[in-house]
Length: 256
Image (tube, rainbow, N blue to C red; front, side, top):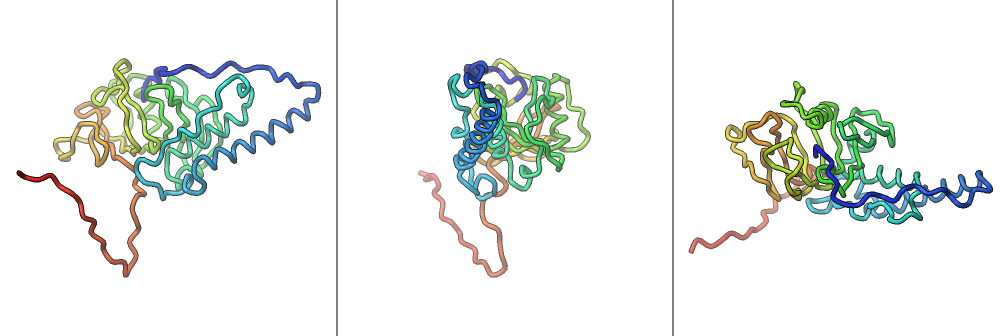
């Protein structure tokens, strides 16, 4: 989350398009290819489900949105941009992502490249799943400052109100206890959302260990402690007057 450590190889360098005799034809061909690839990326997301909130925990993986490998695709800037936008928008609920700015972040937590301008104060980033701590995410203004403070390795965040962040594609992280750790092995973390405020785990009665369901306090006991909630807040069904309650049987371990 804070250091973007490399965990895989980088993309191949850009190559010059060998068909350059007719710039207008090349430009038109690239535009059409870009639109087609954006449609394919949207299809890979599962149609309308990728833009709504009818998904459930564990269904948010974006492996289908990896950039095409090989030098043959290195010059396809519009296709790469479309994939990055699609991946970033999968990180949060559609109520936020549809009007959010989509941008890439540099190593200091600043927006380095705007992929799509938004209007609601949220920023969604595509991340880089080949790097530890660089997941796709959607974060509000306060949360952006919180992340910037971590990138700048400040001893404590400078925020004065809680921030919000969604990572519905899951994430990797070096440590559950130290926000500034950049060397420990990766911890895989499932889809989740975060309230960025220094909650006290003991006072709240919440766990401090990494879990695959429920909630916990990450970086507990430090200025960067925050509430980590597993899954998506949009799972389940909305209640309507007249609905009946259905109690689902669950198994428990025997006492003997």
